[in-house]
Length: 139
Image 1 (spheres, rainbow, N blue to C red):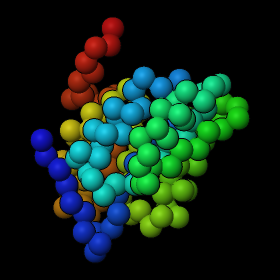
Image 2 (cartoon, helix red, strand yellow):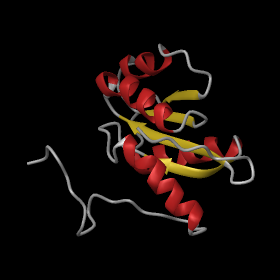
Image 3 (cartoon, rainbow, N blue to C red):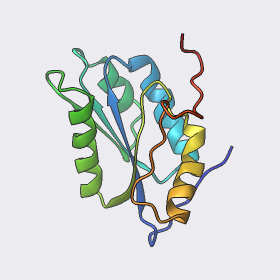
Image 4 (tube, rainbow, N blue to C red):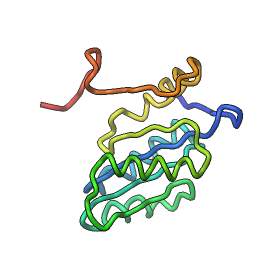
């Protein structure tokens, strides 16, 4: 297992996770992210019609995890923007957006952060739609 430690001069890592009916995944995902980046701040923006996903994330009782449950589905894009706004208010300088379906896998977080920091990138896109990407367990 690899982990990454981002020092203050490099900034704080934030992860935004837009969700819709992800109660079964969210707890494991948060724990796997924090195994790789223990100092990360995580914002879950949940558009589910019920509170199951929100409750599953809050049940972890982690102070670095914030959950925002929106009353109606606003869509992935607005959820990501809301999460990024919250992370910027917490002085996060490296921000990742992840699907609650473990895409990208949390194991890829340290190399992605190291690549972005090492190359002084303002934006690094890890996409399942790039030609060299692999998508497992999809039809």
